[in-house]
Image 1: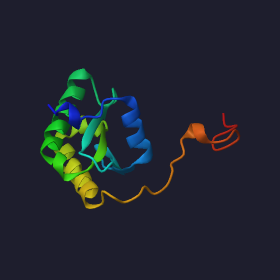
Image 2: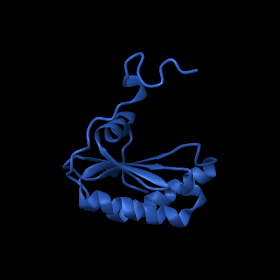
Image 3: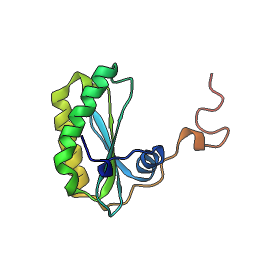
Image 4: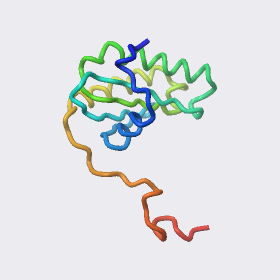
Length: 132
């Protein structure tokens, strides 16, 4: 179990990290990173698409096990979103996590590429308007 000071707990914390931070995707997970200059905090997102509750909890345990010894390497908020492949290929989960974490440690201060538009942010008549 991660200490409370090392966890993201409020929806606003997850939202600010996923929207304002950088991200890197792998086959079984997506890692979102927002530099804060403070000690690292981590949150996990494992949706029902990954599997039933037992499977989702197993994936979260595996991710916590991978993250815990590395928390001191970053001064950032991190959200790790597991994809359905995380449950199907646990060996791939560890490799994907290692790859994404190395990326995060190598470039923790880089700025995001730019604002990402959400489909709700587009004006009426924008992409997808009028299609049936």
